[in-house]
Length: 343
Image (cartoon, rainbow, N blue to C red; front, side):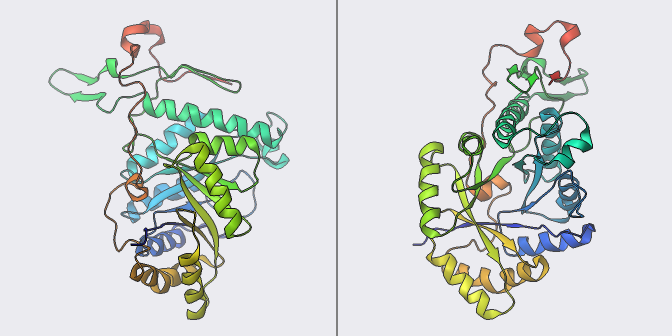
């Protein structure tokens, strides 16, 4: 019995900023029952494109099942703000949010903020690891049942179930807790794009924090070897999707892609990168997806509700749920504030 694969797709469409364009793409991907879609982002003026988080917040009510994974940089941004924004996307999409972690490494982006010169890539990715750790702690800082909303007693929050994050790292110092309730998924899905021979710092972030790796590899053998190395470091719960160019101008191309997918082993699925998103995602949904389903390689329909359901990932428990230091028990009234961040 063949194992069902996981599929995702990039909606990147330089020059397009209209919401209806991305809505049509996401609906085509949802029609193909893909796990999730991604959208790239940066602080540069070109290529002309929308803010990825804002675009997916717009797509959330226009779609029903597909996961939404915007790229959000950890450079020039605060992990507190990122954690709240991705958390909010998880709420408005009812548990379908993820976070494609990226960094900003250009002089143009640094000048836009006027704060500091560009750090070398190893330092940017080390900072990104700290940012992901902070976000995870902030998502955990509210226990699942911290909200009371009891009109009769006038109690809105159970302070015993709010916790300090107490993160002190090289790049950030964050006290916490968050100002938003725990996300529906507990923690939105963390995604990292990675090449087979990538920087040690980027690989370390992926193997420690990622739920999904989008893997670039020069061939099937290199992909299998890289996937084996990643699983040895991260464990079997890591989902590894091989990046795959998608160009489907005709039926012959669709048939060739179906055969290539069926023959490739060693990975959990594929991240599709369309040459022409409008044409290629529709062709994948109409031609390739039915052929993959006939071989037992793709789900016939969504059976779960959240992105973690699609990926077969468990909902993580809050690390603070059984902790001894809830906010109400340890903090003087003057310090019972939302996350205090310094950088």
